[in-house]
Length: 76
Image (tube, rainbow, N blue to C red; front, side, top):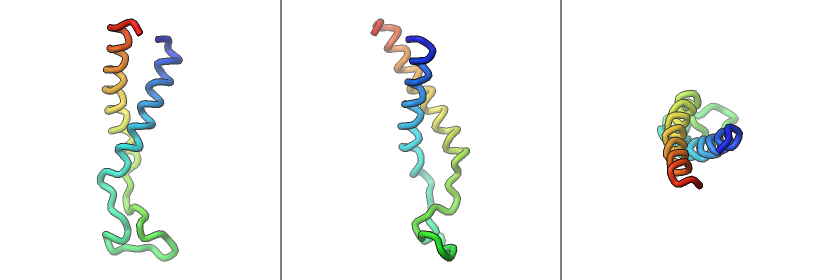
């Protein structure tokens, strides 16, 4: 696997992992009782995107390491 292929694979794994991590810990405006006028009541209050991006990066790195190991070990 060359560097560009490895980066592309990591990016795809990261993106899929992001969509899996995004819903964790979300509280809507309706749940907290603090609905801002003119917004959707189901909108998140504090999405914590930087924290979720960091968590996603760590999880994606672990998954990528496993995939890379299998790729190299079995000479795919």
